[in-house]
Length: 443
Ligand code: PEP
Ligand code: MN
Image 1 (cartoon, helix red, strand yellow):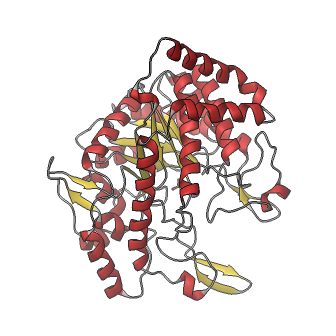
Image 2: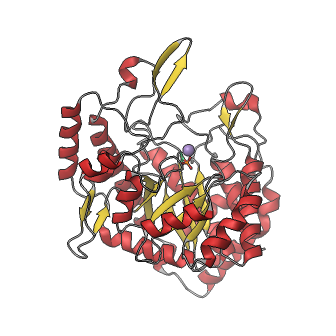
Image 3: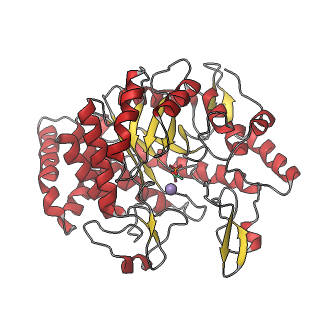
């Protein structure tokens, strides 16, 4: 496999790209990026691909989560720690219920570029370029902030490097201790208004840990975890500059993250995103929305994984709670019948977004749960494996999604609505989701 040049990719055509006004500045940024060391190592991508192959075989479960859009301002110890803490706490509950390994992947250390439904945004009669994520421009509604600046791609690199460094330290340095993670769950069960419902699973995990203590079993696995990074591969300049040939395997890897995915708006079969990701050896995801047919999915599978490498392709469906039970069965049936071995993952967020009367983009916790439930029902009926969850969440107590144990209402959203893009589950809603999915996995 070879890496197409950036010019070739641009000639193929890519949706959702920034229009940089200063091409020299863009080329200088790309050149600098091309000299930066890898953020992740090819061998780590291979390990994750092997784990995703286990997910595809029904022998592991994926938990993938983090912000819709990371921000440079959000690169603080507290923010990264809280996100890891909620993800790892969720993973404990899911591991216990699934009785298979949970593959832990953050939507972080690179999730800085956003596709938008419109190139521009108008407020009070003023029209400016839309915010495309910190990778491209600033969120403030001023001409200066909204100006696409290629220097930001280098800032993404450094922000991702700092985030990943901290994540590696936390997950291997004792912070990710399973007993500690479970202590946080116990706290949640005790303090949540709906905690009683989860007491049984919480107590069972307590007993399992006490049993291991009693027999003197203290494996390394209790103290460290394998944790991986992921983001949507959107801005070609960035992803291409970080795609390198690995000297060990002689294959190209996108070393900007362990796992990268193609979004719902950039999955054109003949587009540049599919072309670039078809060349790399990383495990990759493709978002599939309600308009994707089984033929689309199969054509994407063949193009992205012509050699049928196990673990290479994950389909992340995001149909919406109302559609999943109608649309998912045919898709899974035909893809399975064609012999394509993919991991099936549900994104119960992006098909369930709406705006409240008071002007907040939000999601109902119950709709999120309903889509996950539909995902399990469909796979159970077909005898296929519901391979995992892809969610937008944060470790903080924000008020962005409605409902959950705290019963957040539209009026509550203004208290801590902090996302610059899509609404995220807060810490309590995320843990509640984990306990509910645990019931589905065990049931
Ligand atoms: C996202 O994951 O934030 C996103 C934009 O999703 P999708 O491509 O599925 O719309
Ligand atoms: Mn989103």
